[in-house]
Length: 459
Image (tube, rainbow, N blue to C red; front, top):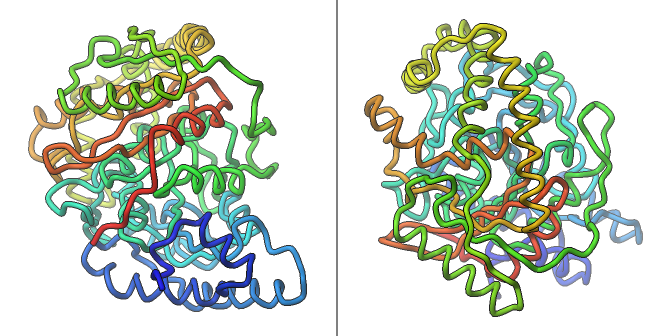
């Protein structure tokens, strides 16, 4: 029999619903897989074995009584350590928060539980969830299970590594500047950044965030198949009034023209040849399925990135400066210094101008995405980076920032983005990014279904 841990969430749900396997069997298979491979990549930094077994047993008991157990009943998932899960520390990769025990679940965690998902562990993130690499002084270094010499991505690096290695078919991640889309790209899986307001989020363990983080940060799923992203998005997106940005928009919108903008070098950004090759191949798959493909340029990307960085640094200097210094994490200190060199200290009017500029850019992008319901573009301008490249020097960090323009700029606009794994190039995972108008994750997933298949596990 095929090991249960190799199956997708969609496949597992079907098996459990038919009674071919129990939720407990699926959980035990996943926990055994974690035992076998987690030490190699350090993706999961807190185990939830006893809780997972209890949740699985409750699902099996409810099924035996003919009760509804939810659309994700028995599916093993991981939760990122920057998100409240009752009884566990919301560390965000910080020693100073190792005893910050959550007394309530975050809405996204609560929604996954209601859907029947079984939480098997908590996934690693860089300190302060600050990087596209994953290492911190509390939990250590997460490596890429597909290729240890390259980054697993960040900040949801533990989440992406866990899915890639078969330690649960679905992982929860967060994305403020690529923290779902880039780890998915680096680990050769799929990752969905939902629209602002689609998935409710709130941590009772921390004060409310400043306005930039409120406008840009979202929770979403990572998985090895597009149907799994669809399944888990529906579970995550259930209402929770603790998040004032939550919007009860339908998961399926009106029919749109099957027309996509192929953007090989958005706003003039430098894009490596293998990345462009992957984009052209994805465009060919869409064209073969009847989509109209037009090669065009985009509205401003670099301006959106610049304004996002102004907000980012302004809020870090106000709300996180002392914590960064106190934590004394070498990587976080280096990245903070590099960012400050890029973004000089701003007076309050600069922040207000950034927010005003956001409205103008959003109008331009919404109009563009009305003409082209899907934009096909790079995840990054480069293939996945060598691991820990960002802390080598200021110049290396600035080269990384340039390659990540779409990772930074698009969240500034509140748009959804889908990172789709398409294969390998030069021994590294490669993929493409799909972008749509707000609350049109459905068309991203429809297009992703055409481009992608089920990704095999690593290790």
